Length: 131
Image (tube, rainbow, N blue to C red; front, side):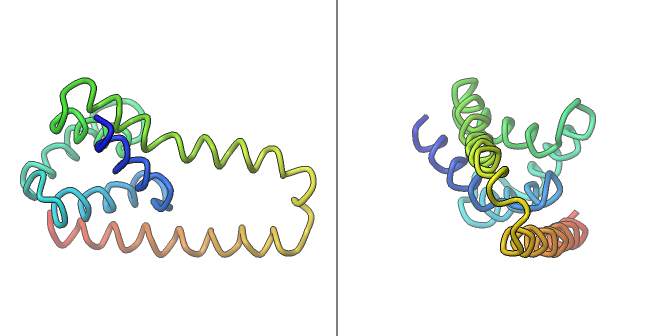
């Protein structure tokens, strides 16, 4: 379970761009690199995730963890992928009052917005080509 948690935890720190981009990151990691499943199986999980409430990437991550380690693996994947976002949000909330008006902070936010557009476009294009 720790290896599932660790893998999703690391992905949680670098997966920017929202649920559509996360699905692309998951495909690259679990289909292409680790070969936990093939494109057909992954496509079925993504399709199923669209019928469930909540972000599709949360559903896909939970399903990938479940496929690898049962219910405990599903919980480990969800916690691992979500925890970095929680830590970042808490950190930003604590720093916000001190840095929100600085030009450096505004530049970082602008850069992250641009990066998110590129990441989502790349994920959408990659999924379009495959599925």
